[in-house]
Image (cartoon, rainbow, N blue to C red; front, side):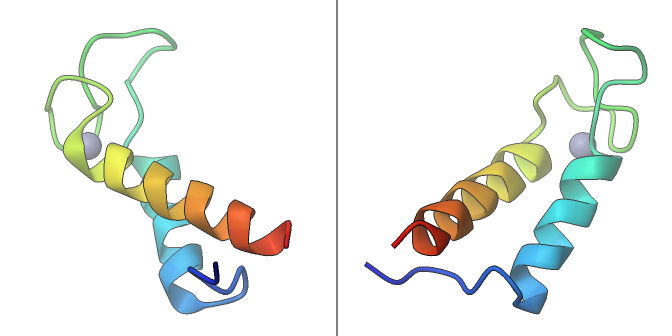
Length: 59
Ligand SMILES: [Zn+2]
């Protein structure tokens, strides 16, 4: 099933969000960008998009 083109702006935006929304320290409890408990909702959504894009790329 086609989900996201790996080159689409949706995927590149998700990659950028995922890069920014990480704990301040490795394994830290809170997102360094929005302060939510890590993985924050933004990172979780971005990860889902990346996973979907990867699945699409494998087909
Ligand atoms: Zn965040």
